[in-house]
Length: 113
Image 1 (spheres, rainbow, N blue to C red):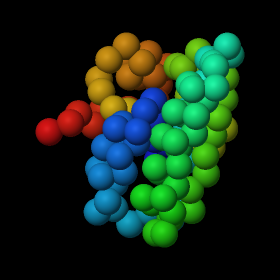
Image 2 (image 1 turned 180 degrees about the vertical axis):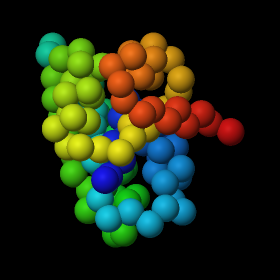
Image 3 (image 1 turned 30 degrees about the horizontal axis):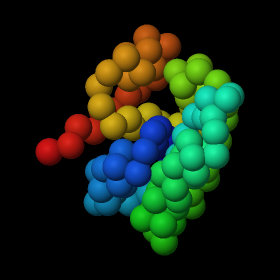
C-alpha cells in the first residue's frame, strides 16, 4: 500500500518528501484539500504544493495527486479509504492529525527538525 501525503503548503510538501526520501516506494498519493470558496491565489498555492510532491518523488514512484474540496479531515479520510493507503503523513501533530486518528487512520506527524 502507498502512503498519503496531506500537504497544505510548499514547506509541508517538501518536509514530507524529505521524510520519504529513503523509502523504496512504488506509489504515493498526495492531497491538498481546497476550501469550496478558495480564490485563485489559494488554488495556485495548493497546486504548487502538490507539484512539489510530483517533482520530488515522481522519478522513483508513481505519484497520484488529489484535489478534493471541503473539510480537510472528511476529505482525507474519504480519500484514504478509497485509495487504500497504508498511512497518512501530515506536517504537524495538530487538530487535523487528531481528527484523522479519531477516524481510525494511521497518522504520522512529520515535525520540522
